[in-house]
Image 1 (spheres, helix red, strand yellow):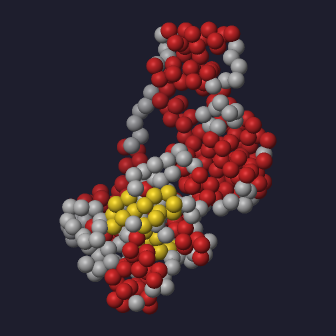
Image 2 (cartoon, one colour):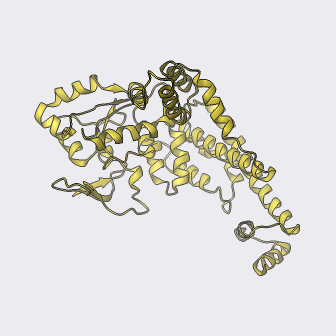
Image 3 (cartoon, one colour):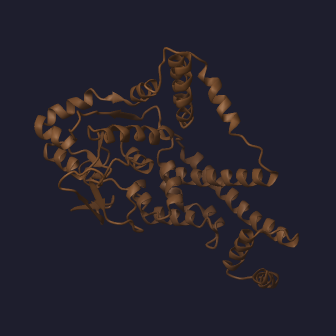
Length: 394
């Protein structure tokens, strides 16, 4: 049994490993998920790494608990385990909040190789110019624990020096999808690469990957990318367009506030936070603000751990790895502007729903939404009390 600790050192779960590997049976068994333990966010050994070095130069990502322990016993004290081969985007975000250099070294079997490729797919949206992700491929039937036990620390560290870069692994894998000597094969390779390259959010890197795939497939890959983007644009109704646009603006506003707070925690004292009332569905922003006010020197990753909602956690994690660097002045303006946008949109939403009620166009979901907005208020007007009664009788 292995205790799984969060970033604060609290034991939140236990993990186990089968003593003998059996086919069709998972090697790693963990405690069931709870409010405090979500497997896709946790990394075994991360707390111990940060006890030694808050900002490690690099981190080795391995599969299991025994790999972390085996490497530690041989003096390699910067390894974490994903507790199996299901390495998630959330775990990657967490690692990138502490270091830009990651060595992924899964077991040398087919499952380990496939897991390495899944790690590539998860990493594409998070890539930056300063991100260095490399892959170490062991021989079949080898794992990090057995390798370091047989060959020693120096031999293992030499593997890191010879590790395959993220881009090399990506393009080698892409090229293996079909026969590049034929027109049909090159077309299939381009088709395979298309959705993957589209995942890259960093414009500079995306351009570099487009150019490389163009060379590999001997075609203008950028036109395919543009065509893919256009084909995804459907013709939504006016209402859908407005709703989608509003949701995008609100999400970007929340992301902007989180990014500014992470870089300048003392801005949590800005008066404009009062624009978000306690009955607002955006009150989680004040919860994050309060965490920073209580512990202004807290590492953002500790704040990250305290967020229970996975949706909010994802936005905060995105802010953690944001490339946007803000001066204090710019961060102040961003927080104030974003808070105003959110507060205005919130009040506008109530008015829109009331107008739809008057026009007898409320859907069941909108009726519940309007009820919740009104019931959360400290004090209702007589008109609102009457509206609640009418909504309940519909």
